[in-house]
Length: 363
Ligand code: FES
Ligand SMILES: [Fe+2]
Image (cartoon, rainbow, N blue to C red; front, side, top):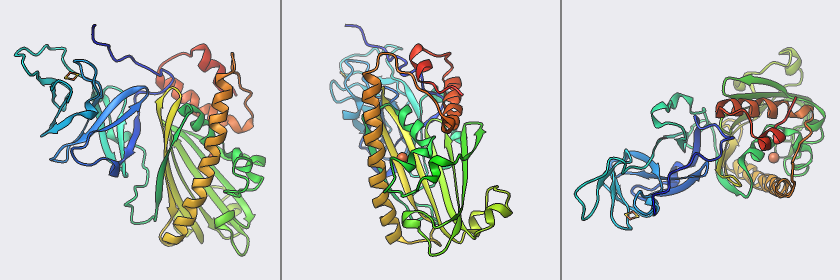
């Protein structure tokens, strides 16, 4: 048998992007952590010195997972027949054999710990630029009181991205949980293309707020989020005195001038395989607008709401999989979906397979 070569899988996704692999606290020192991203098995480990490394999780010898291996200083030993790998992916020792072939190496991935997440660059490690890591809010941010979690999906990441790029589903999927009311589906947000994503901004004027953020009197409520490559949602929202939206000509307000309900959520969609994904999220109030008790109530609602998305999206995936030639019919709410998917397609550097063309929203 010849060694299987890693194949570039899932061509519809951008490789030159930082994917969230785990919460930082999921990775204990010298305990290799396994995850599949874009169909590629990746092992991440923290050495005793604290250095973070990521390699292809597949030994060159007989393809055993290196995540079952043993940390030895900065190196990782395959615990099947003992090949020892350097952090650069090169084999440095083969028990019982002097000569180490030059091709005895696995792929190295760039990995960075930031904002409480471990980010893996799926393109060439040499081209990885940490400046492109989206500015998520970490769990240790002193300004926010955040809860967090993650959810595994039996669905392709792209369907979750599409869901997060069109909040008109709030009026239906989350009719009671988030309690957003019909206005999300009846009005369009302002949508602005960004270099690596799309920005959504929305004022709801003269409202009583929604669910846990219900107010005694009417307010103007602002919500804005950036959805960034490869699938990172960064959103804040807050309440303002009635009239603020008009006074700002419906432009963005200053978060510091919010009169209530200022909160932030960071979310990340990671494609594991073609039909599985992991969804990471944190949410909570600004420390001047809430406390741990409010955070817990927010997370309880988020858990229900994210479960609602999962039911719908996994069911949607099953229908798509059972459809010979799946085609969609975009609506006016799909503008953000279209802009984002177009950007990803451009980054993925491909001109469209029949399947992706069929599922691609056209304007
Ligand atoms: S499979 Fe890794 S040493 Fe044999
Ligand atoms: Fe949702």
